[in-house]
Image (cartoon, rainbow, N blue to C red; front, side):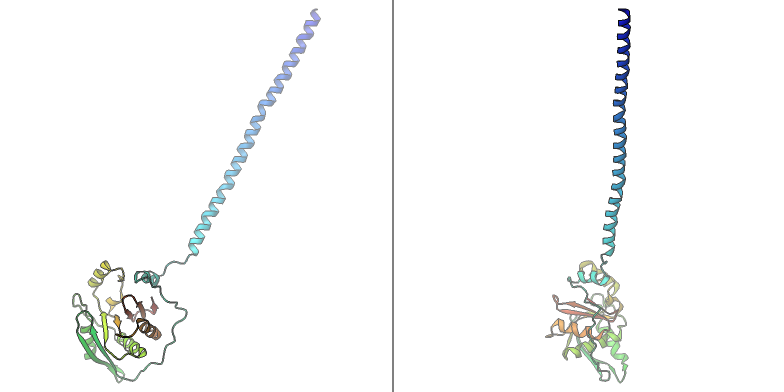
Length: 246
């Protein structure tokens, strides 16, 4: 009987050890699984970061490729929404009359004054005529004057000749003092704060009875400065600054 009890005790002891080993193995499995899961999660996080970076870089690259708006385009948007014409295909310059006396017949739209003067002949400008033009084209707001660029009168004269116009030219705006230009820019989005009018080398004009697109085309064909097209207001801007169109 005693030997039977001892045998039973020994059997129970071995069974308990086996159970304990089985339990220990089972409890260690989640640890391995947790570690693998953590490693997989970590890998996912590491691979997700470059994807986000690539997306940001792609967006930055697209933004970089997008052409920035040029100064002329910005002005074009302010001046009634007309973008500059393509500079890659300039209008052919016609043969210009370099010998005939150059006379202008003008009417100041703001003061209603009129002036007819021959400012160039025999290969030279006439000082007295230029002085009359400087006074006639004064700032209509504060009566300020400046030395107007004589080349501007040539641009106007040739433009009229190419357009086939020999009548009186309406001048809407010529010289502007910095103060007048700043005031106009504050009340009108169509006035540039760095306007060529302040330099005495710009005019806004009309040829009564001549379509503005024909005046624009004639002025552009000279390739002698800036030409602004304002069909809604019915006038053309000309200046002797850099060649550009809007």
